[in-house]
Length: 135
Image (cartoon, rainbow, N blue to C red; front, side, top):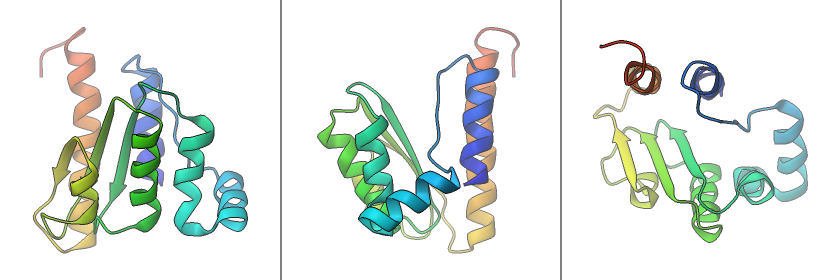
């Protein structure tokens, strides 16, 4: 969750791309209590997402049911793109739902998460770099 927060803030502030994340404790607690933990991301997408939006999901294993359901909700709401960050097995369930899949060939959680963080921040730098500096 903190990785998504960091990326979201940097993408908005430094990249100039409007971005929100759904990792507020009150939102997760409310939606998980009311709809079940496996559906809280789905409900966040349904309540906050609009047609044409982009969904970025992060799951080390690619098997997190809350993220899978969020991707399915994004498809139902006609999001333009679903981007997934995952690891472990290349044919994991999350990769099967993404338009763009960034996959780490490792089963070590910390390694997968660190690579995801590097890639997320590199995306911000590429956006900034296209306007301000060369990498």
